[in-house]
Amino acid sequence: MNLISIENISKSMGNKKLFSSVSFGINTGEKIALIGANGCGKTTMLNLIGGIEKTDSGNITKNKELKISVLTQNPIFDPEDSILEHIFNSDNSLMRLIKRYEEQCFIISRKHSENDQNEFHKTTIEMDRINAWEYEHQVKSILFELEINDLSQKMKDLSGGMIKKVSLAQALINDANLILLDEPTNHLDLKTISYLEEYLVKTDKSVVIVTHDRYFLDKICNIIFEIDRNTLYRYDGNYSYYLEKKSELVTNMIKEDARIENLMRKELEWYRRQPKARTTKSKSRMDTIEKLMEHEKYRAADEVEITVSGRRIGKKILELNNISKSFGKKIVIKPFSYVFKQNEKIGIIGPNGCGKTTLLNILTGILEPDSGTIDKGLNTVFGYFTQNKEEFDPDMRIIDYIKKIAEFITLDNGETISAGKMLERFLFAPDSHYTPISNLSGGEKRRLYLLKILMGNPNFIILDEPTNDIDINTLTVLENFLTSFSGLLLIVTHDRYFMNRVVDHIFVFDENGNIKSFPGNYSDYLEYESSREDKTKTVKSGNRPETVKKENIEKTKLTFKEKKELDELEIEIEDLENEKKELEKKFSGSGFDPGKNRQWEIRYAELEKIIEEKINRWEYLASF
Image (cartoon, rainbow, N blue to C red; front, side, top):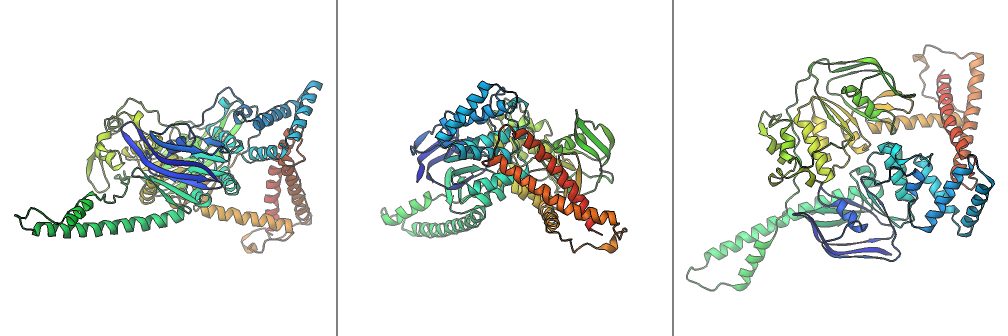
């Protein structure tokens, strides 16, 4: 079923044409990616589909069955709303009923009156009447997977990552058959991104996504729309298919240009050979020449050129000695030591709120550690690209913003170029240099901020979520630059493709303030974790791992007491895992009890901790 038809639409922003005479449709179940360079109009296209903006010309026809849910890049919310109020902020009668049910669940899980109980009973009857339980279970499942537990929290008290999760939950929960997602993976941790991937693959809803995450595109999308040179191109396949077909298209267009150029040359030679006195020439030949002259040659999109000279770095770069950090009672970083070495490229992963950005702020002197020392080399110069949006003066001209850092910079080949030339290398056309920053798109502002960081010529680059709001072409160039960068690199990113291409070492944060060092990229780490999970399965089956090299372990024999403990651990772990599975069923199954929900959540968290401790103990004992 066709949900929406776009016919010959055009749109400009000020004097800049985004696209013209664009037509396409969206059908039930299609998973569409919308890609293109920053500023080409991807977000604007989503807004047109969602009815948030209007076209300059053309028509958008919507099926009467169409219901749209939107996740914007920067979620809009009332700070005083609770999570519950934000998620269920809808005129839909089913959503209002679910909201009332959730509110009453919260009330009766605490102190409640007989009247509260009666109201809850009435609501459950209404839920039965319209058969709303299946939908309510889906809601519960989404909230559980996104780890949204306390629906009474105010939106103003949430972190940026949590706000994104709550807004994502709202977009997925809404009673809609078309979901529009603008950079949905920004500010999400890797666990949440994996869940979102699985959800979107399985859902029968139609989806249109703007994202730079290439693994995400490959796994989910079956259609790619690319906005390029004011036109929309369609590719029926995932991102890998798009790359293959785009390459073929470009090759064919270049061949066609060469063929037309050759034909044009022959026609012009014929034209010149005609006698000067002759006043009439073959009309068909003249028409051919005119048509050939009107042909627009293919011009590949310009690419960002990233190059700096690379400031010399000393033998001592940065040494951390037992640094730690807490905020109130929450321990963010337990004592951690590390000596950074030349040419290291380190990625940092971990759940939202675990302290990744805190570590970066401590390294760069923005925050002081509670304990420990930081010894920075004399020649170490940081370039810190922060996760937070740069506070631009909207009225400042683009060229003036860059000149604040340097009017000239020396490149790696020894050439000295001006700030204006660097702007051109970063795809800011000369006629835009004197326009205010407020005219730039979100992605263009991030690109300008990246240029500012590199203009400082750092030898220790620190990037906190650098891939947010930056288009795929720029990311590819940035990856190539960072791979060959001779200084030191430290990156926090949720972009798995980016991390796999760039880093060769991982810092892994957990929620308890521990930081583990792992040699390898993100895929290597996943493979390592997968092998650990296999060990866990071995525990449940009662078999010991066969690959342990006992000759490398000083202790060679278990005591009688330890043997008994090992046997008991196998049974205990299996029982605990079964209890955990039963709780998971209760969270989203027919046995859900709102009065006991909080108690179950507490027990579930306890089980995860106990199981991890017992598996670690089992692995130790099983190695002898």
